[in-house]
Length: 293
Image (cartoon, rainbow, N blue to C red; front, side):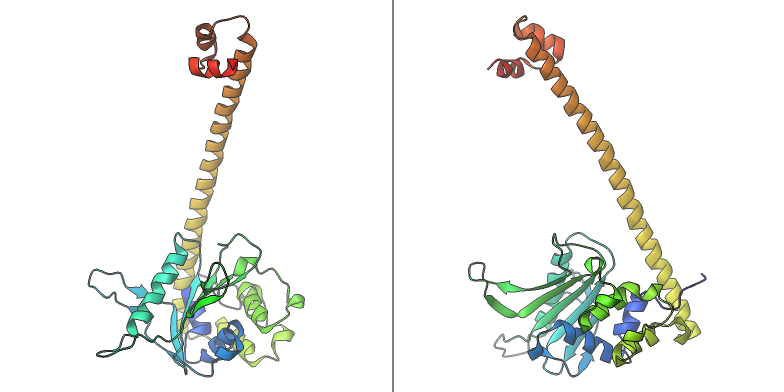
């Protein structure tokens, strides 16, 4: 495979973990998470935890996270990059949070106190029916809109909704989102990003020329898998769309035929009996009786 771009695709598993999931890139992940969280939760240090959790029972499914880490206060973070829309995504996110919850159960006596868990989903698709690209959810009282429980937080970022150009960026988080959406198309780091130590390092890590031969091979294989995956989804979507159009046409034709039969029947009500009209139009006797009413 001949790669023509200067920077890696951050939506590949390799690219995402190179930018956010290594010891070298840990300061970048801290920067990104701090941009998302309230000031009182600012992170100073992070420790990467294991990314794979077995179920409590042998027959349970296991959870494999993109990134699972913990800050100096014990707050736990699951950071997931979702490359394409999938059924029950929010159910999956909730399911994933149950593993670090269960892992907090101490052996012996335990008073059930939990440390906060944050699920951060970078979504390369749109899932909410609004214009907001950032969604911040906690368990909330339906009547008062007050937070009932603040130790379980879901943060979703819908990257396709983020449409700002470089000149319109108004905060540090928006720079990160622009980075994810645009980096693969760039020839060099923009001047506006060179004054930011973490973003400049992100560009450096994402540069293909900085990879070893082994890393480049791994990336090329990962990129091929990503492109095949996207093409498969696009093909399925196209076929589904075409099938939907055909069904719509057929439904429209049937509805048009029915309306035409009804109009003919209306014109015959004064001159023919119900049985004859039914034979002429194909409508049922009951339908014709309704028309007479």
